[in-house]
Image (cartoon, rainbow, N blue to C red; front, side, top):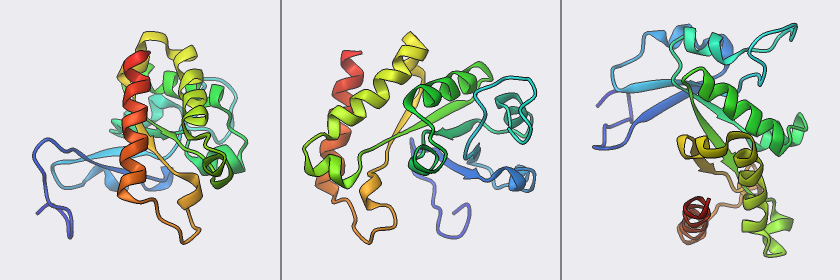
Length: 170
């Protein structure tokens, strides 16, 4: 057991994605837990006060970074293209982007789950091209965040299968 409640599983890597101010504190973490950040700038350099570049994250020992989280999309108006640009910035700094995709309750009710996810991934692909194969994709059903509703195992499995099929075709 690495940390209370975290037990190593063969073939599974545990990644702890922390807010920027706490990354330095997590430099000393138990073996077997990788470090990631919750966001990054799509810009490698320049006058972007308050932004954290991929190179800065790499200096802290991050190997991963979350991009496209639903809260970033909704609250900060980050569009699909920006998510792609952030994923590219991460890859250029040898960070593995964890690209979040998912639908709202209204989109799910209209049967648009894979239309939405296909659009989100399609824009990332338009930025990354063949490097799309180098990202991780995290399914994040937006309708289940903070609503008291939970996605069932069957719903998640169905979407995971559809995402895999989409990726295999692209």
